[in-house]
Image (cartoon, rainbow, N blue to C red; front, top):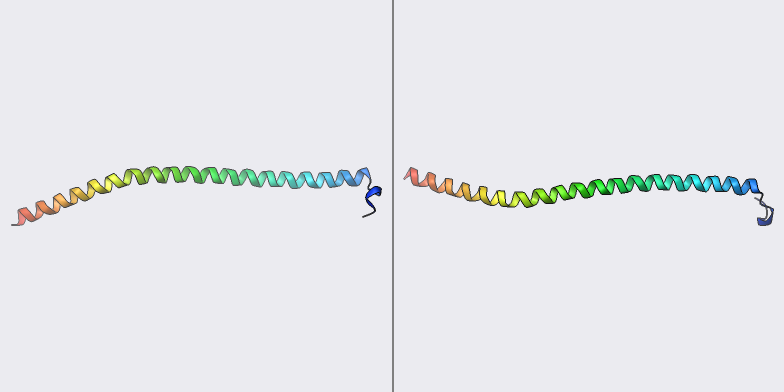
Length: 77
């Protein structure tokens, strides 16, 4: 490339087009990353909700299993 003062408008235009293409590509990649992050946030929200529901269900299930085991022991004797 020639001296800075000798840069033509055509060269500046070509550089600008190259930079625009790179910026567009970065924008597209960023949109994809943001979409993936939002999807992951939604998945974690669902998992958090399931965890909140599962804990009481496990407690109730354990309690019912204990009652069933005790009942079986009472009936056997």
